[in-house]
Image (cartoon, rainbow, N blue to C red):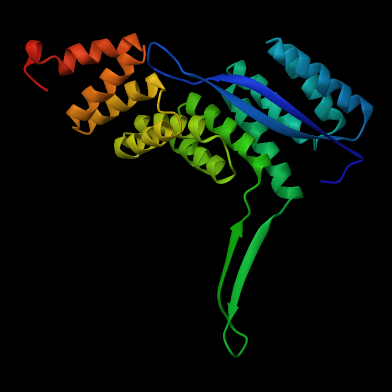
Length: 257
């Protein structure tokens, strides 16, 4: 990226994971954004917006970020933060558009692609392939766009974006957890079960993950595993797990394991 100044901002915010359950899990997400400053006004509007965003004034942040983008339409961080403001305002379509623009900026300015071409002895091309290099800057907009698609019910697209976010180094716990939710909504219970298991490999004491994996295991006919997961969730303090334990696992009341 070419600019006179490059300022790094670390933005820590908490994303409320969309859920149909009674409780939601809150996972911290670290945004690393590179702001391309082409004018003092651009920088000022962004910083004012950042303060408003952190105060949950999303409408105010949105207005200032729009002004920042009027001054510098290539400001990657402004697109990302404006997308997050729209997400918090439940404007998921607008958020998706802004995250998409941020992705386009990174891909346009940093085309990191290794292309392997194989020739025969006569110089004819036998095969050609390209592999994109992981870029940590892309992890943020892909993950956030996936959350927006998940919230809007676009589950196939959400799964695709969560997978891309992982390829670019996104936080494994939050990404696998949310991809599992999207896959569960698609009826892909086996894949969802695997994603929940990956989350527990990283964080073995997340009660809600056991709770959710219990329902996924139940859908797969793995009733003993489901009961074990609900029991673990209850032991970790997730009281809602008592209901499925009593309904599906209490042998005295229903005679099933």
